[in-house]
Each structure stands twice: as structure tokens, then as C-alpha cells.
Image (cartoon, rainbow, N blue to C red):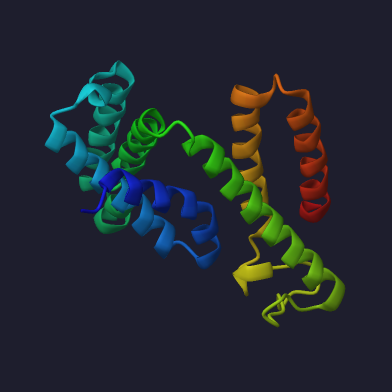
Amino acid sequence: MININNVSVILLIALPFSLVTGPAIPDISISLIGILFLIQSYKNKDFKFFREKLIIIFLILNFYLVIRSIFSEYILNSLSNSLFYFRFLIFSLAFSFLMEKKSTLLKFFSIAIILSIFLVSLDTSIQWLTGKNVFGWSSGNKLRLSSFFQTELIVGSFLTKLTIIIISINIIYVISNSKRYIMTLLFLNFVSIIVL
């Protein structure tokens, strides 16, 4: 029988790599992780994650945004932004739940982020040196690089956001380990060269 938690863990660890493919696969992954978490919570009658005050405040705020969208001049446009915003809350709760169940999750998630940053940085370097990335794609822009994102010029945004996540994880969990701290600084210097 398929273990729901294991499926969610696989989707979560694959998430940094799926970001390279565009918005569709990451959105589907986030939604699936959230749905699997809700199924697991209902199945085990475990709703402790939903009882936090911050969660209740977030749900009230999200409900308020949906109501505001209904009375907006551009209802469909506005609703498309606010209606499904709660999925990020569910995803965050699912992440907390999985971290509680799988003690090594953060380690493997961090490795996945670092690998995806490294691969995009390496591919961007190749594109900068040769004019084309490993798949033979050029950015179509003389001043900016696109790596795996083809015509979308979002390499800097991708690297910056994932680097902020990895810095946060390091600050919270591994700052006491001096070797990892030095390796992180060296890694960040490498990424900053690519972004600049």
C-alpha cells in the first residue's frame, strides 16, 4: 500500500527541481501535497495544526480577500489571485507535519535546493561562455541569460529566492557548525557571481 507521507516527501524534495519547468508542475505539486496532508489529517482525526491562532488569522484574512474580490470591478481576475491563496497555508502546514514525521526531511530538502541552484548556476555559466545552455537554448537577449527557462529571463530571481531559503535554513539549523557555515558562504559567493 502506498504511504501518503512518502509520496508527499518525494513531491516536496522534487519541488526545487520542478520550479525549472515553469509554474504548472510546482503548483500541481504544492496542491497535491496540501490535499494529501488534508486527507491524512482527516483520516487520523489530527487537527492540531489548524488550531494555532496564526492559522485562524490567516484564514480570516484570506476569507476577507475573497469577499473583496467578489465586489471587485474585475471579479474573475481578482478571484483568481485571492481564491486559491489558502493553498500556500495548507502547504506550510503540510511541510510542518512532514518535518515532524520525517526527521531527515529538511536535510534532503536542503540538498535538493542546493543541487537545483548549482545546476542552474552551472548551466547559466555554460550559456554565458558559449551563448547556449546544455540543451542548445539561447536566451534571445544579448544582455541577460535564461538557462533552462528558455525565453523567460528569471535566472536571477530563481537563484535569489532559493538562496534566501537555503540561508534561512542554515541560520536556523546549521549555523553552529563552522564547516557548514564556511561552505555556505563559499556557495553564496558562487551564486552571487552568477546573479550579478
